[in-house]
Length: 148
Image 1 (cartoon, rainbow, N blue to C red):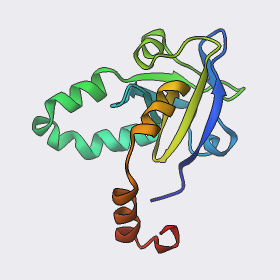
Image 2 (spheres, one colour; image 1 turned 90 degrees about the vertical axis):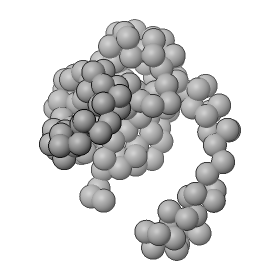
Image 3 (spheres, rainbow, N blue to C red; image 1 turned 135 degrees about the vertical axis):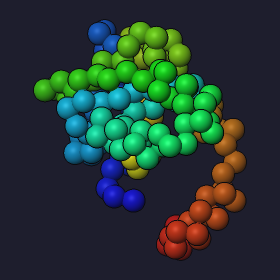
Image 4 (cartoon, rainbow, N blue to C red; image 1 turned 180 degrees about the vertical axis):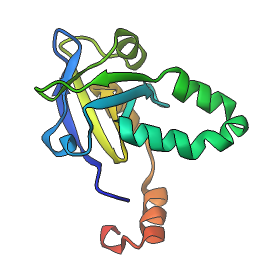
């Protein structure tokens, strides 16, 4: 996996429904960012370049996963990264993930993509996750024995 998004950051949603992209994530983003509805009531995003590459790889298999393609492509919106490194989150995305203006959000880096969560929803989700066995298996599979 090439360098990309990693880590988690607490952010504020401003009065204009914008967030500031965390400094470590800025290098992985183009001026254009694609946002989609995430699978766990969050906003998922990636660079436009990454989005285009993903669509190209997946186009041949669209017929196998029509619901997933509808979900991802049908909710996709392209936003512009401002000079101040902010992106606007459209209103329907705020509603979907339970964010409001002046809320605290979590920016979660996940390699080629990132997620934006309502902080309370993310904490609840994290409390319910029991991923230790799965995470250790993945770490072993990738040879990340230092994490075990």
